[in-house]
Length: 162
Image (cartoon, rainbow, N blue to C red):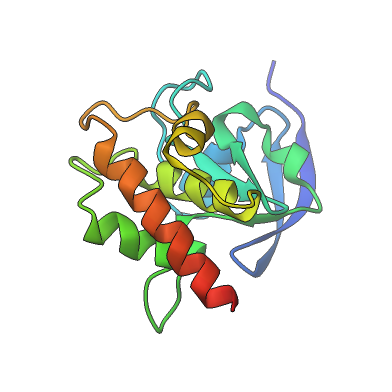
């Protein structure tokens, strides 16, 4: 039996959308398939890897663990929604500058989680970054450059706030 369709309204990267979606459609599927925002990756479909991390009303969430209907009335920000025409987000710049990626598959989710982590902390050290990124996996690196990038991104984000 097919799932019933539901009408939802949400803002994704600042753009309003009114959509009809199957009740069982995952948020990650809506983003990738319907809205063509393919920067949000599907890595495990079991909420283990964090490649699908986006911001929902300002909080980092794993979009493979939420139904699209749960985002009704919410603001969603994907990797495509950070930075802007004038340049990269400071965390994106830090990941680039610190060579905090190899294959790049985990990078969008890692950056989205890192931004949330910095925004919700009063100053991170290496251990706090390691603990904060615990639910985001990278299969290529030893995390050294990722930790370095988050700390550098934190400095840049704090400097932007001044």
